[in-house]
Image 1: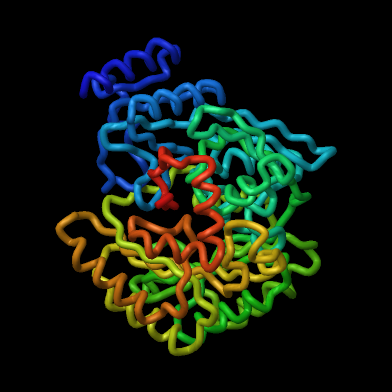
Image 2: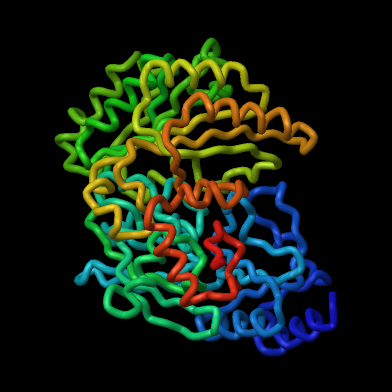
Length: 458
C-alpha cells in the first residue's frame, strides 16, 4: 500500500473499534468475496460500520485521501461493484436494525438487511414489502435499482413503496430524503442506483400479505408452452406474479428420469389474493401442458423465499449473462429460446422471463428513475460454467441468444453487468438520463461513488 493508504487504514482501525479488516487479517479473503467468484479484487480494507455516523467518517476519509470506495449491501452485483481493487469496501452487513410500525403500515430498515431477513421480520406480523426472489440479496442495492419480485404486479416495484431514505452524501453529510426534503434526489434514488451516496436505511410502506398460494410449477418447455405462459401471466389478475425459468432439466428427484436433460419451464408463482380465487387464477398455467411437477400450495408469504431450503445458493465460478426488456414473446421467440437452450454447452444455461404489468404499469414513467413502466417482461439469459478459458464460447452463446430475442433497447439496471456506458444509458431512456445527470452533478460532482452502473458528470 502507498503511504496514504497505510495512514488511512491506520486511522480507520483506530476509530472504528476493530470493524476494519486488512489484508493481513485471517478473515480477509472471506470478507472481500462477493457473490460471483470470478470477481477477485483486493481492497486495502473492508470496513463494517455500525451506524450512519461511521459511514460518514469512512466516506469523508475516502474522499480526502483519494481512495476508491465500494459500497456493499449484499454483494450480488453482476459487475462486482461490491468490492474495490486497492480501495475501501464499505460493507453494510452490520446495519441490521428494523423498526416496524404495524399501525402506520411502515418500516424503517437498515440497508445491511437481506430480502429474506426483512421479509421474515415483517411476515411475523402478516405484513410485507415486495423485494426480489432471492433471500440473500441485500435490500440496499436491490431497492436503489428498482426491485422486481413476487409482489411486483400487485404492489409495484420496491421503489414504489419507498417513503424516505437516510443517505450519506459524498461530502459526508447525513440527509433525510423524501418527497418534500431533497425531492429530486428522492426521485433519483428510486431506480438510479448507488450513484448519489450511501443509503443507510429506508422507510418502506408495508402491505397486508399473510397467506398466499405459491410455489413451483414445472412444465415441458415447448414453444407453445413458453408463449402461452407469458400470455397467461400478462392476462392474470394483479394478485398473481409469475417468473418462468427455462432450462434443461437437472436430475431432480421429483422429476421422471426421462425428463432429465430436456427443456423445462420451472415457474415460480405467487398468488397473494384471497385463497378462494387462487385456483381460478392459476388454472391457465396448468392447462398449458400436463405438469411435470406441481408444488404449488398455500403458505405464509415468507415461505416462498425458502422453496429450495435455507441453504445459500452456490456462488457461480464464471457466468456470462445478458438482460433486456421485451414487449412480446411470440411463437418465433419461444422457438428461439428452446433452440438456444438445446445448443448450450455450459453446465447450467437458462432464460428467465419476468412478466410485469399490473401495478408497475400504473405508475407514471416519470415518477421514479425506473422508467420502463410499460414493458411486458424482463428477459435474463445466463450461462454458468467453471473455467475462465471457456468465457469466449459462452459469451458468444449469450450474445447470439440475445440477438435472437431482443427487440427495442432497454435494460433493468440491477440485471446489468459490466457492459459500458451505452448499456447504462439504456436503463434510463429519454429525459431520465439528463435528469439523473443533474442530480449527480449536485450531490456527487467528483464521482466519488463510481463503482456502480455509473452516471458520470462530464
